[in-house]
Amino acid sequence: MRQCVVGVDVGTQGVRAVAVAPDGSVVAEASRAFGPDCEVALSPPLSEQHPEAWWAAAAECLREVVSAAPDAAIEAIAVDSTSGTFFPIDRAGTPLRPAIMYNDGRAGEDITAEVRAAGAELQRKLGYRFPPSFSLPKMVWLARNEPDLLARAWKLVHAADWIVGKLCGRFDVTDISNSLKSGVDLVDLRWPRFIEDDLGVPLSKLPDVAMPGECVGEVTPQGALDTGLPETAAVVAGASDGTASFIASGACRPGDWNSTLGTTLAVRGVSEGLLADPLGRYYSHRHPDGHWLPGGASNVGGECLARLFPGRDLRGLDRATEALLPTGLVVYPLVRRGERAPFVSSSAEGFMLGEPSSEEELYAAYLEGVALIERWCYDSLSDLGASIAGPVRATGGASASNVWLRIRASALGRPLIVPGVSGAAMGSAILAASRTLFGGLAQAAASMVQAARSIEPDPRLTSSLGDRTAKLKAECGARGYCA
Image 1: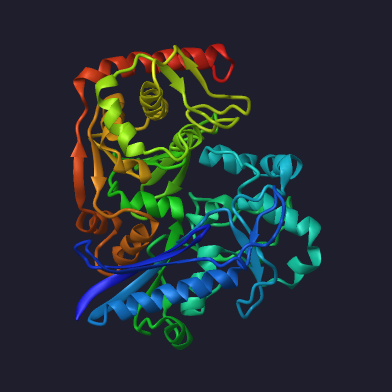
Image 2: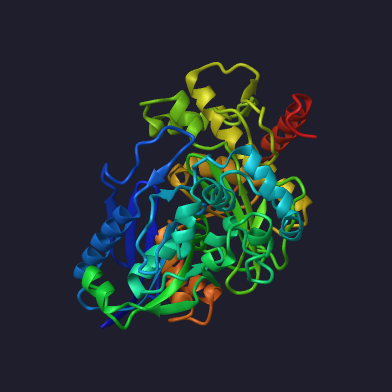
């Protein structure tokens, strides 16, 4: 029998599961999209889903993975999910209402301001601010607007917590990655008293906290019947989807960093100590091996290409840009209003300095513009005291574009390493292996993450992109977006 572990990613649109060997090779994988009955029909800013649809999709994926790997000895499983999502359950683990999703804005500014005031000491301690999208403001909304339901609830759980409960029977435990947005104290690993005393959410209704990778149980007979997993498999605490994706990048030791570029850009790294940002651009998760995981996300990313070049052959545009680099244009490629990092501004809007001579040059300028924001993010993190050593790991859909990778590497002035297998499910598999097959997360990541390719900076581009990063910063300051 071949040893392996399983990672499950419960996303917004569906579930993905992978079985992975200790060397990082994928033994089997499966995915399922949620059906139309998963989403509750609501108008923004409300967003809800039915948890039962998550379990149905997850169980199908796991049965397919187990069937595809009949000679695999599955040792452990971990689950990640969207952070900021939660819902109440009874003692049997039955959901009492649909899940309030991570992108739900019902808490609004009034409740959020109250949460910030009550949690001021915790925010100073951890170096972040509660936004309306965090789960704690929405838990307060539940306490104020559905008090009878909260009184009947046994626990308020996150999406990954509930899937873990379906697997091992424990619905009373959460990982500190998902619970960060519910207000857990990441230093003392406990729920602060202000959540109950000042905000009215009883601490008895919050799950116990565990570190990602910590064993919380074994697959129950019912879990085995539903999924095909062996009852001997350990169920370990997982993480948020963002943290799991970061783990899959292979960044695992202090000084390692990862950029995930898809619709938007997210950066995260490993630091020895807690990195506090008084401007609220970046916040830190706890690393399972005892370090910290500072990071943040911009509203800039591949969305600009989807908006400006809909239906176009982007690979063809990639080829056409080769002879046009560097463009000399300065683009802030924001296609919506408001920014989160490398500065916080609700009024920020995209702009361009200069005029492109062709559609191809416009496309190239937008590729460069995203790279300028990525460079600015790392500059601002360095200003906060972050150590950024060696190459940056590059994941996300944009890592398929070699020309974009070269532009980004040149802007950063350091190589970009693209892992062979990425994604949140892979990160959960590494977490599942971290304390079962290995002696910790760093050891597991070093063994299981294999680099597919490395992209070096182009000296011909580096100087131009550096100069234009300075111009972009100055223009954003002149427009009042940042100091």
